[in-house]
Length: 118
Image 1 (cartoon, rainbow, N blue to C red):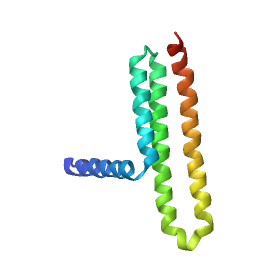
Image 2 (cartoon, rainbow, N blue to C red; image 1 turned 180 degrees about the vertical axis):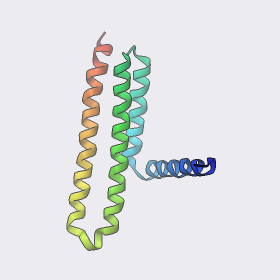
Image 3 (cartoon, rainbow, N blue to C red; image 1 turned 90 degrees about the vertical axis):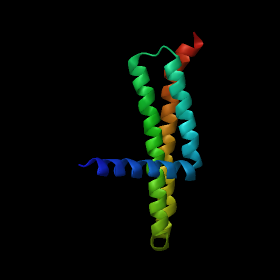
């Protein structure tokens, strides 16, 4: 793979992230929450596995929101033909993001609270 193709791939990936960041309020909130969680994780004397888990949970939530956005855009394209499925698909994807987010909050509390209580 040439350097030019690799550079183009990174350019398109960054453009996609920029698009999601600009268009999705929830994604911007989740990025902010992730930055706060990572800052707290770096500030507190976490064990390495706790730090890894915090990083993975931030990535999981952001990835879930990106996938949700892709499905929303795709179902909007199909809306004229499959209108009764569009709402269900969007709700299911939003539910997936909610599960990831609640899981991240619970894991974050389990990791951070003992350090914050001390």
